[in-house]
Length: 129
Image (cartoon, rainbow, N blue to C red; front, side, top):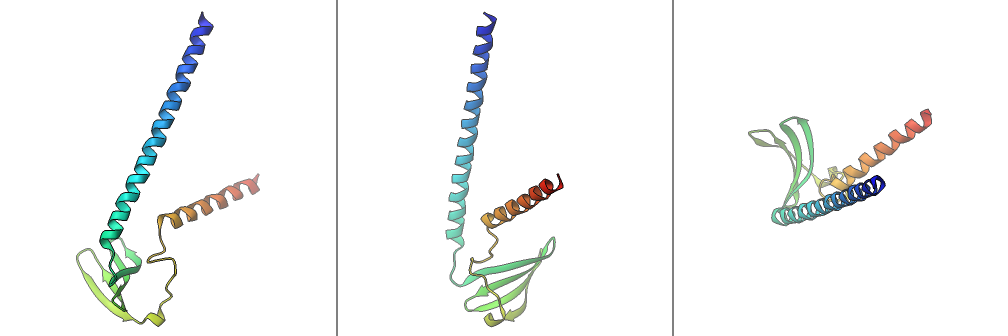
């Protein structure tokens, strides 16, 4: 009789684990779908042919230099907590623009860089052994 109770509790535990695993995967899928929908919506709302943020460079916590395209001209802006100032106009010939898109810092690129770093670290640990 004890063996039967042990077998039943193992089956119940396995069923609970599988149920929790499916619930976790479902929540992840819903989160991914929601994030993509919101991201695409915001992308459509902020799309403009005349204004484009090309690149940003952080100077400190609340201070950035930002390269923007307004119409056919490029400007460097100083963006602070309370103000935005035009630093200079830059000619397109002086810039090295990437073909990847506006900033080239999408989540996919950051994720692949993190993966590459982890692989480098794991290779380093294997060579130490």
